[in-house]
Figure 1: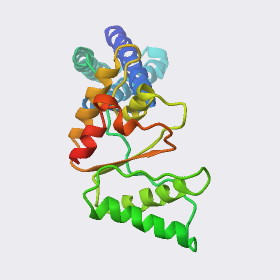
Figure 2: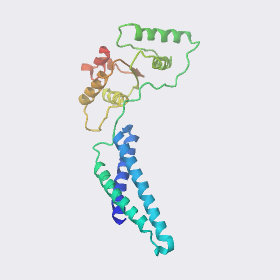
Figure 3: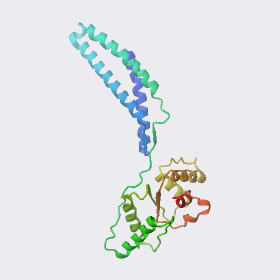
Figure 4: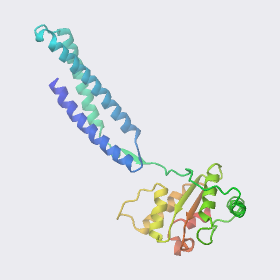
Length: 250
């Protein structure tokens, strides 16, 4: 049993390290790999078996203060222990994962809270006009502009939610830009919504632009809504965001 306990201590420590690594990855929006889940399940199974063996051995030692040992049970436990030692060793060897989790697809298409525009005749007409432009024309870039507070965000939120209930687009992405966002910040906002792994300090603007373009290129048909946009990023030199060229193609 001492050999088994030593092997199990090593396996348990490894499982705890992997579990912490998985939990940390999931906190950052990643999905644990199936092989990791299966490995952890096997570890839990063998831990239960070892616990049962130790319990039986403890009960046997209590019987008549150990003066009347059950040799048949002890031989059985010995064989089981040897088998579990081998299994634990194999699990330790198999528990070398290059990556315990992977980036999951960005969660696109969730419903946003929106103010109803029922009975708002002008807003309703504007909404239908924008929808028509999006769905029934060859326009690739549409600008909705006006004074602050007139309901632009409300209209676009309702459009976003309505289109999410259709199959018009494979992906609909909502980005709140704000007036203090430059091209670099906008790139990172878009990359985050697309589930692109951004490593602080390792990716320059061109790298991010290429990743965004590649991610959008893999999507057959998408709609990108930029809310609260103050600067004209649509005509940034050489498609600095990595988006506009792709919008014209989709």
